[in-house]
Length: 168
Image 1: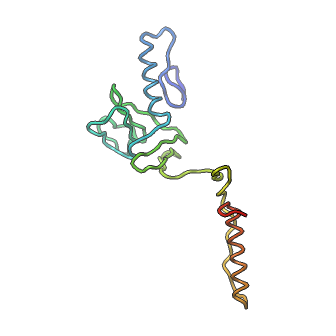
Image 2: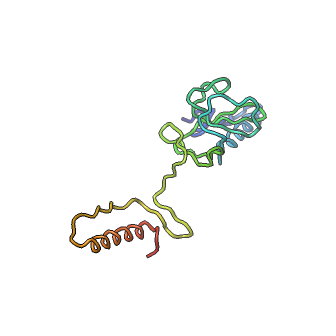
Image 3: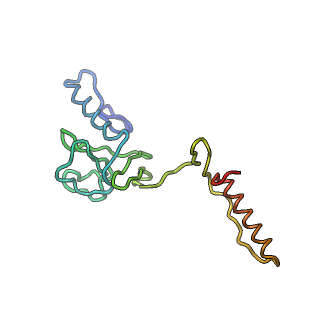
């Protein structure tokens, strides 16, 4: 929720008319943007701040934060020249998790690591995977096993082509 003092989505500090030392508010907003935009974190779910973090290093705070991180569950915690800064995630916010080598996204109040949601996957301009198709029926009965196998294999090949996994 936007107030006269913060932005609506990331709660960035806003300048006010006639405000003294506007550079302080502006610099704070830039420090928070630096953590949130193109975010890359060391790990997800860490409860205690590291003892000697490098400037610019970030983590996602765990469910039971302690010390300087207390009260910042799920936030992106970043160490800056001015100490710890925190960005509360918004729905759909992405980050790169360095330790896992995977993306994570904030969905329904929790960080989900490794899942990528998409309607389909395009590689080299070609759709290679799409929505899951209808299931392939198990073979049943049949007097001639060869004919039954050919029919099932034909169905499998058609499904692979539909999903773009093999060329037509």
